[in-house]
Image (tube, rainbow, N blue to C red; front, top):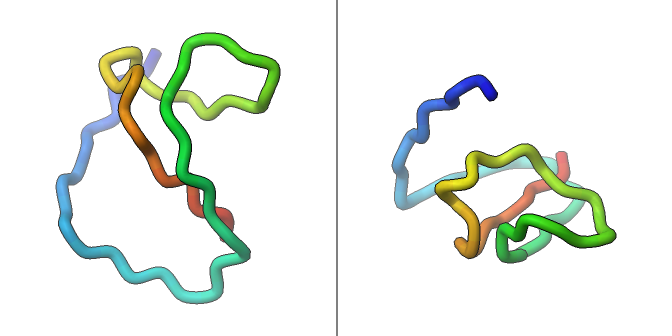
Length: 50
C-alpha cells in the first residue's frame, strides 16, 4: 500500500459539503470501507462527502 503522509491540523473549513460520517476505523464489516493504514485501526475518523 502506498504510504500517505498525514498533515496534522486543528482547524478545517470546507464549503459545499453534502454531509459527513463519524465512525471508528475497523478491519472487517459489511459496510463500505475507506482505504486507511492499519496504524489507525480503532481511531475515530470523519469522512466528508463533497
